[in-house]
Image (cartoon, rainbow, N blue to C red; front, top):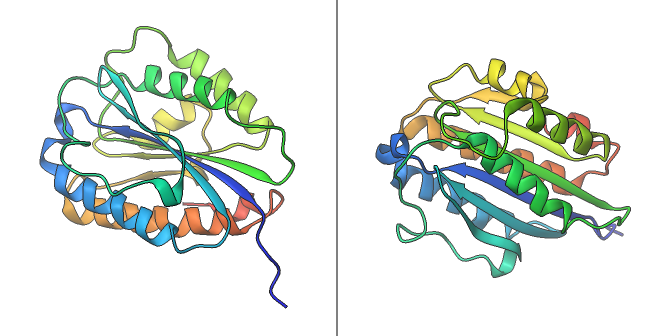
Length: 204
């Protein structure tokens, strides 16, 4: 008899929509929607939170059951402005603190996707973000960092995100396709594993 998967997963996207992403709008929409489509077919409960950021911030999805999340469109995802990466991460972590419960069989996977360096945060700085991330990792949260046009390993390392959870991606159509394909696999693995298995399930 197949064991029912009762694991609850919080999948949190911190997704760059600054001006430099302009040429990748359609590819990003397609990649994101492909992940949603395939994850809707997976067993287990999943909730989606999506922070879109440039130098402003918008929660496109606010802790929605994945089956209630519609595919995104150009009306949802469009680009402009600068890159307030630290503020986006800090605000999203703070928000999730108010959502995540103390349920034993639950997991948090935060996926940070950007194509540029921090250049406009006002509320948070890098050292504070590192402390926030390290504190949540101690609680079992997992963080992935995918960056283009930057040294992603240097940036994520300063923020306390492991090298095994970090990847560079090429800022072109093929790079976006590969990145979201990889994310889909990792999210699926994470949703199916126990907390003890998570460390090996989501290596990039």
